[in-house]
Image (cartoon, rainbow, N blue to C red; front, side):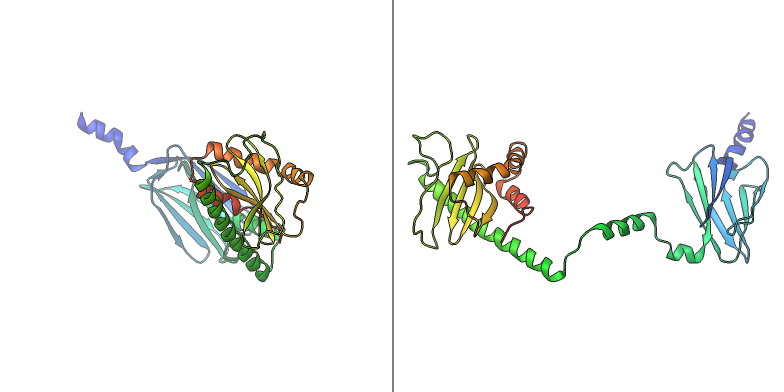
Length: 293
């Protein structure tokens, strides 16, 4: 009884996968032979190359009968698939300049044999390289000096902004118990112009401020010859800076806020749904802002 079972299982141990079909696709730059198995093919693929013949051995693979195919391609002239003892042999007649690349599908149910010229394989860019090349052709580029200068300007602006925000946060903390430094407690939240005539160059003064909600306020600060637009609240974020085009009236300040309405909404959404630390969130947002010098 045991011998009968072993004899019954012997064909399955010798031939792990059976070749169900094969298809040949003749392209202008290659020839692809697609082989389909009934089960995932896990056998070993061996290849030997002669002058005009490539022999592929598929171990643990079987086929019912021999197959022969004649072609008129410049990459493959004939193909034969022959069942052997313990493996299947594929013999391809090719010109001397043709090479073979074999690859299985992701599920191992298929095997692709690609015949193509050796020079074309070495010089032909892949699909990803072609897509990357087309993308690079459409992207604008900057000169190295301009890119370096922009980088230094952004870094310098970030450093100045961090210093200003640290100074403001320290000042607000020291006066928090006495009164609100940003708001007049007897006045409803609105745009509040603050007159600062003859302000020394090293002092920070408030030009305008407006409450966005209970936790956040937009403030226009003067520091030296620069004016900074800052979103202050649980996180302090530098929105923009001005040099020659500083807002003079409340209407000009309101127009600036209206032009940045979408930007302010985005910062507030990030603040409500993010658990990041304020300083880390500020660095990520401030690094994406373009500044006008």
